[in-house]
Each structure stands twice: as structure tokens, then as C-alpha cells.
Length: 410
Image 1: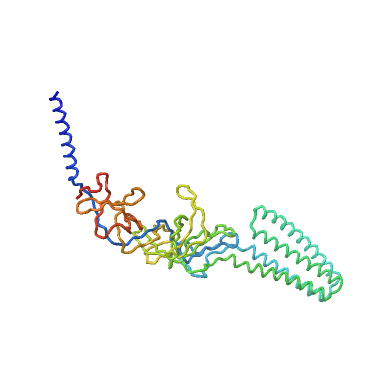
Image 2: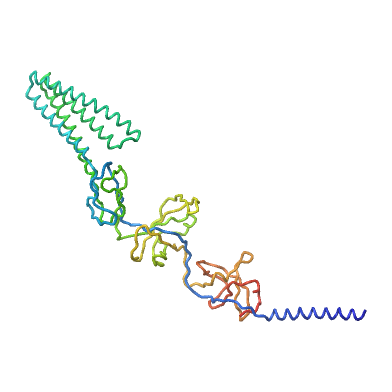
């Protein structure tokens, strides 16, 4: 029995000895760690987005009339001057309308002269025939106009074609009224009132002729600015529609960026905010820019993942020269939302959270010491420390579970 107790005591003593040795070794063991020094520097917070290069001086040119392109003088990449003729649209129908009205006006002038002279029976028969012919022409013009109106309402013809039939009807009506007035003057004898009717019909035709002539310029498209042809959509022989864009002219002397920013990121974006512009493929790095305009209204945009997002468009000036920049290029931008200069900085991987607070381990003469800190700005892999550290102190990077208060480190 005594021998058994003796062995128990020996076992207890051995366990205690092992524990004490382990505690001693643990207390005096040294853990290898990676450290970094607390330094002063500058830090920026920013949001990252994509932006597209645009031309400040650019003109989209549209066709004012429909028809066949009979002349096209430029192609993409050509240089043009303001006033250069870029394109002509066939206007033969318009010229025929003008010529027809000019002849009608001459006819009314001749009828007026005959009415002033007085007419015989033969002349009356001629005038009666003119009235009948004018009535037939008016009825046909009215039928065509009514048919064209139905086609235009159904989208079957252009507005220009419909308006031409309306003008033709007005011309036929004026011719009919003039013929009737000439007939009345011949039957009743010439009077001042009859002359006024002739003059009124001639004035009406003159107005219509001038209106048609004013439309002739719409068949010739000229460049409004000096620049380079960026888009050319109407080759010779093609058919253009009224309102279609046929050219885009731009000048490379001044470019800017447009970017669509998430509404959630706009709180700290201001006109005047600094921007850094980059494109790795073009070897463009951190070119300075400035937010020059924030559009007043948000809009919906579908992301690459198919998610509808609310965004705000902004415009950014390019404050440094970039060689070989072209409209349509995509650029990477960083919009600076906050900055701090000459402040204490540490690497992000030194900080960990515990109980809702931020902590780091510092190197206190070879011993790890836990310390609470307060963070400021965060950017890339760096963090601003506003409280809890001093310049020159060394912090442990990526501390693992083996690092505790009092752990020996090297």
C-alpha cells in the first residue's frame, strides 16, 4: 500500500514538473512576426468607375427632307470646314412644283391683261374651257390630297410627300378661282373688284412659290463646324429619311470624360472634386482631371449583371495632355472624395476588430502589446490612424492566434 502511494506522488510531481517546464518554455519562446513602421504620409479615399472620352465640340447632323442622296462628298476621317457641302438630296419634285406654280402665276397675269382689254364671244368660250379644265385639275388634286392624307396617317408615305399634295391642291384652287374671276370679268365687264381678285390670286401663288424655294436649302446639307467626320451614314445613291442622323462632325482640340456614378456613391462627389485618370492598355497612369458638371437628374441603367441601378452622370475635364486620345475610349477613374495630408499611416493588415473596436499589436522591445486605435481614412492597403499610435512605432502585420499580450516576438 505504501509503495502504491509512493508511485502516485511521483506521478503528480512529474505532471507538475511538465506543466511548469511547458509554461516556462511558452513564456520564454519567441515568435517570428512581420512588422511595419508607423509613418507619416498622405492618403485619399476615392470611388472607382469607368468613364468614356467625349468631344466637347461635336455636331450631330440630321436630314431635313427624305429622298435619294445624289451627292455625298465626305467619308469617315475626312477633314471639313464650316459651310462645306456634305450631301445633296434629290429635289426634282420640288423644282417641278415651283415651275408649275410659276406658270400658273404667268397665266393669271395674262388673264388679267385680257380682262383689262375686254373680250369677245370667242374669248368667252376660251375662258369657259379654262374654267372647266381648272375645275378638273382641282378635283384631281383634291382626290390625290385626300388619298395621301390617309396614307400619311397610316405611315405609308412621308410628311414631305403629303405636304406636296396639299401645296398642289392649293395651287389648283388658286388657278380655278383665277379662271372663274376671268370669266366673271368677261361676262360682267372689268371692275376694280375683279382686278383685286386677280392680284390676290397672284399674291397667293407668289407666297407658295417663295415657301417652296425656302425648302430647297433643306435638300443641301452643310457642315456647321470645322472638324473631322466621325460618322457618315448616307452614301451616294442611298435613301435617307427625314430626321435621320447622316453625319457627325467633331473637333479633337478639346476632350472630356463622362461617367455614370451610382447614386449611393454620390454623397461626397462635388463639382471641383479631383480625379485620377488611367488606362493600363494605353499606358496612361494617374492623369489629373476635375469634375466639372454633375447632371441634375438620376436615371436607371442596367448593369453587366442585369441589375437595374440608379446613377447620376458627371462630366470630367482632362487637365493634362494625353497623346493619341480618341472619342469613345474607355478610361478608369478614381474620384477623390476625402484626403488627409501628413498623417499617421499603417498597413491595413495590421488592424483587427474585437468587440466593435479596432486593435493592433505593437512591438514593445521584443514583446507584443495590444493597443486600441481609432481609424480615419482608408485607401487601398493603408489606413489612417487618428488615435493610439505614434510615428516610428512598429506594428505586427497579420497577427495570428499565437500572438497575445506579452508574447515574445522577433
